Length: 396
Image 1 (tube, rainbow, N blue to C red):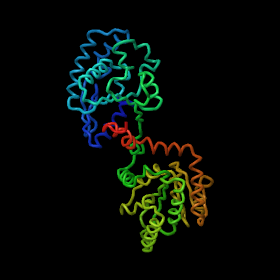
Image 2 (image 1 turned 45 degrees about the horizontal axis):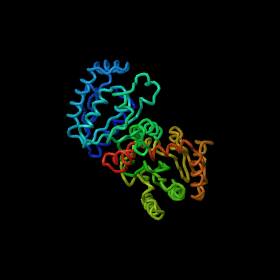
Image 3 (image 1 turned 90 degrees about the vertical axis):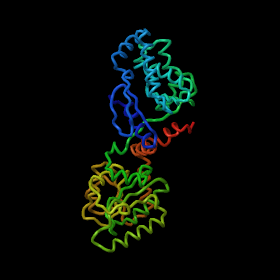
Image 4 (image 1 turned 45 degrees about the vertical axis):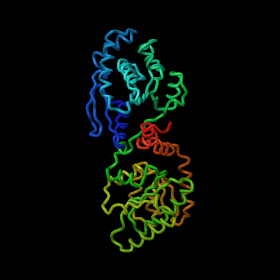
């Protein structure tokens, strides 16, 4: 049974394991889905366990029975055994929602019995602030466990809004609550090929904004030197701008090697070694259409600086991918893109082209959001910025 919270736990566990931690997921049902992450089955942790459903029905009517206490004791015994060798125990929503109050009460007892165990309470949803749960909640134990700041526990929630709710509910300062947002697995969401992902990681393309795509072979008629100069000018407004040239050297003209050498020299002269990327430097292999299409999904703008073309397939690919086009004003490209591209003369000043790009980007809410998500909400960035410091005790 996988929903939003379970998906988040899956991403967290993967990232923790990749960082070298030994990770176990404890749940009431399921199975191991990641070889690097162990699964521990604890039936009474399941909110739909028959015994838990009976207790929940009683609790909704305000009844705390002897069976509740017995179930709590059984869970304490199991949890204590599971957590015996753990340094950190993270509970998602267990101490926020009343889905399994026996588990909540047991966790509280285990935390009191294990003072060296770091307890992180991760609150996605809050029963006490949600009207739909109000009729199921009562004053006293165990319901008060959901509106109390447990001693020694680290409080985490997923947004500033939730932090405000939680702090008010617990009667504590907002500064005592960490905000760690949920994120996006870019590689999975975009269905990136393994080779594409290798390029992205090696070139730090997720840190680029904007990312310009020039999907051409390295030949003089592609006028790639203009693209390099445009990039240099654009970095005045967007210091993180980057360019990817996907194609290999043109195979039929020996002069292309000399042309490539000139491009590399110009890149060095402009100080763009970390921003202008030629995939031909990384691989001599033919790049499949699958890999090329990945770069269209990653790119923010298509830049075509060609002096001449017979057709212009990248225009079609960009159009189908929804990537804005900036291209030289030559008849074949204008024929394809019509009024749906930004054109510039082949001899235009790089600063002029860059200024048009800056104007376009600054006025686009969609691209502003795209940049924000890429800068703040990828799982890898969230792990580095928030979760790793949480685990090693740094960052407040």
